[in-house]
Image (cartoon, rainbow, N blue to C red; front, side, top):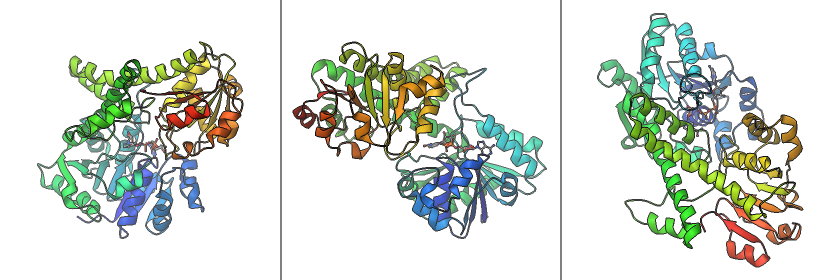
Length: 464
Ligand SMILES: NC(=O)c1ccc[n+]([C@@H]2O[C@H](COP(=O)([O-])OP(=O)(O)OC[C@H]3O[C@@H](n4cnc5c(N)ncnc54)[C@H](O)[C@@H]3O)[C@@H](O)[C@H]2O)c1
């Protein structure tokens, strides 16, 4: 089976970059990425490729090569479904905010809407690929909807979870550790569908890195991978608190531990807590699934990863209050960074949001500088928490375009994102323009302590 037309529903952080790379690597396949968000599609089609809605190093080059050739962005979802042989579903699957499973389960309403739309529109056989991260056994529900509401055409459902990390999405897509494809491998049709997707990735990925499994293993592997990654962060963060009490330094501990080849060095950097749209939601989803099978010990085990992460954010904020003589009321705190990590403009679940919220509850005034995050996004993130009125958020939080302006007359500076440029600033100038004592809180272990203390800063870094 040779795929000629691909449709991807969802032009977000996963759909956009993934499809751009598939289009670049497979020039003979037409790839159409569709979304109901008109503004997002407009931005993907912006003449100036630097204005595409997602910032990822290298992405604008890939888009500029393929866009208009065999990569298209559109709001005409029906037309793209109709023309496609293979449909990727790459829509958001946030944590439910209502009803059964509120605050834990994945909200699958967007997935279901896609399935119903595909069933309504499709007039010939389709391969439907789950690209979104989904609870194990979602493919069963998809198949049910497609088979029972469709036009009598045949569907094969594949699971092809995405392992890219924001900030390095293009590199991860070009050279992934593995590609995982789950399908109905017990049937001939299922195997054919799996092979069709393998053939696409084989354009640029060695076949020994393309792993095929049954659908359930594939769905569960993605949740497991995210749970393990987040667990490592929470594990080292738990140690960071102990380091602060004992005189150990978490960077030294993590280096010593990570050199053990059984453990490995990646994902052992202590910080003010993980953020991003995935780790928390996927672990909560895992906890919910375990609970729904009555596996309470399994659920509790993984839930602790989230509790530790919440604790880390809270104790970073609480330490700022304590260090500033137990009050930040009316004091100006400068935030360097708002994105959940460097090299992305994504702020979902960023620790900065929660640290800011905590400090605002303590009546601080906050000034934010982030190299890539827009002002409206920062206010939207704070408004979403519903902790105070939108007016108050705008009164108490200022967003500026210059780091030196952010730090001017501040009582304290807090580093919330590990943007490379922060260490390169003229810290003497920042110090000179701050109120004294000048406090500096490094939530990312990014800055050189010795140099900052020599300048005169009262310096605090996570885990030392
Ligand atoms: N962001 C990541 O780093 C990452 C990594 C791996 C997997 N994932 C998973 O991929 C999925 C998508 O994540 P994302 O970060 O790209 O989300 P996103 O919110 O950036 O994008 C999802 C897009 O889907 C669109 N959409 C929703 N319903 C639609 C519909 N019925 N028709 C057309 N468009 C619709 C939305 O408008 C939105 O633009 C999630 O399940 C997520 O868990 C994300």
